[in-house]
Image (cartoon, rainbow, N blue to C red; front, side):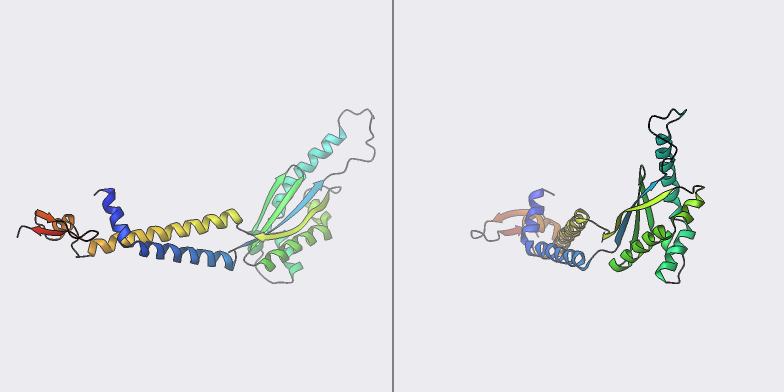
Length: 238
């Protein structure tokens, strides 16, 4: 079947394609306007091991105490990224929230990302308020008793400093929202095209010699041109 024939089918019922596409666009926009399915609160903390007091600039040592302090801080940040996803840390966060629930429901939604000595902790929730409260509780747990968690990592001199307090935002950014709207609109367009083709397939109306051959199964003898912009009259052998 030629592309021109498909174009003729779509042109005949173009309003149906436009209607389904517009409906999909409106529904996609409404879903985006109602809000995200998830919200994320992100906290950034710096983990460090201070340089020993007896380490003075210019003092002759067999090693660089500043270098080893920075290196220890990076290792400490690595370990802390795993600790904040533990059940014990989730229990402490739950206690600060004053709620009774399975700690696994907290540890499962905590994600971490480390850049040298900076640790980003992201928690996901289904509402903005819930994500913000979880972020605040994580900060409170780290600030109230940092030694409790650092002691588990076999260090007593480590420090945890909150660089950025919890910042809550939609789980899906503007680009993701735009892509979702575009994808849903495209699905509406494809559905409209499929609907038009299906309606044409089951439409018994004879409009051309192609329809005669398809519907009646008879060869076309002649085609009499109709009025301008009108349908031609087709004669078939009976």
